Image (cartoon, rainbow, N blue to C red):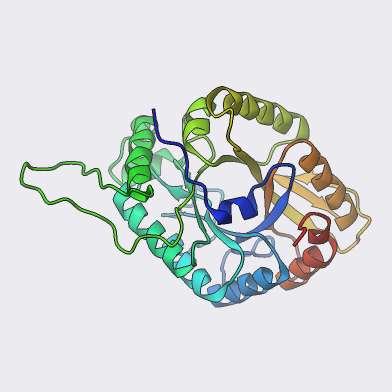
Length: 316
């Protein structure tokens, strides 16, 4: 059986029983804007960090295609995470998610240790499997084997990032040296499942600090959460395992505007947003990261969320 996930102070700051924290997904762009000025994005992240957002999320999008629904050009996640580590002080930095099946796990381990070191232990390693068969082919991988590859890479990565870090080589001759990672992280690097990676919830509950899912309507999300709680009860009954979601948000400049669904989220005013988030907290959600869109300026939306929404949920 796999070893239990690592506990780390930064994980407890983002995920805690009976609490809901709020994060921000980068880049923040207006609707129909596909080109990001990443110097502005780093400045916005620094601003959000100072205002009290608990986490800053960075995606891993290796390649773009005209067939892919997200046309945004994303920086390599390790480059952006390194910049964020040097320009923020309190917020967790979370990969949402490194494509575990398309990167060698030892390269991921080196990146994770490096970011954790620069961020003084504020890094949480979110991991996913990717969902585009053509991208697997571009990297010489068999998409049909992604489930087994995800499991194997997770175990190699977990061994490398454990407090008693050990390197599990793909191949080793009898006279091969023993390898190790330096520098070691300031804190253990928590590993978080983003999506299912083709695995069962029982597998995830045994190995991950939590399960980050994509937005669903409340009834479907409640069923998802019940599935997760049952898996945690079976596999880690004495441990806390987080449950979170990524939600698209178009924040209206009318505070009283009712919530209406958009793809993977809502358009809403702040009053209805607070009500929705309170209901999510009561239902057992521990973290929500906003993927902001709409026509308003990003800093204006971030300021409104910090002034009018975060105080309902963040106690410090």
